[in-house]
Length: 250
Image (cartoon, rainbow, N blue to C red; front, side, top):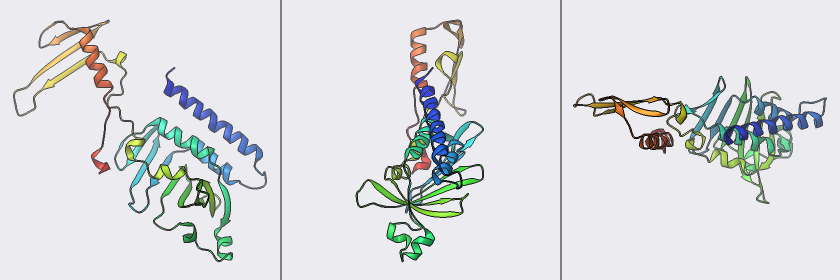
């Protein structure tokens, strides 16, 4: 079993354990915010990150069982990045301070906490339910930050304190969430290679190799044996190639 699969299994086990602990300790008579958070994370199907003033958006959506980046470009998402996000958010402790009614009664406004229309934002969604986080100032002790949490199921907006590490998600780049590999097929599953030289407007040539049991042989432009070691070396190099940047990131 690969290290990636083991990591994903452990991440799912952590989420399951967090759900159990939260449901066990939460008040049976009310819907707890922590319970809603864990429940949404465990069934997460959409994630949106907005950087703030620059309004740069990273959007991810789960299609069937596969995660895709849909903004600012369309590509397969990095499963480890998604699992890391779910695990860290589930681990954060959200300490409730005030709801908007209590804030008004105290004569305070959201801007006192550094929260306005230009604040960095995170939205996590599950089915038709969502939770929005607007991120404000760092607290005086420097370890937390203020956020305005909007729970669609509660129809309530709450000011909380949470670990300031949550800000890093809004500062991330699209490539941090991208599966950068170009070829998804493992080396052992490749049994044919076709290489074309030139283009449609100039004279071109091509080479085709096929795998015959454990050996690679030329099919075109001639039939014959190849240097297996060189073929495998080139294939491994090709499979290991990653995308460094998408044009839409500019």
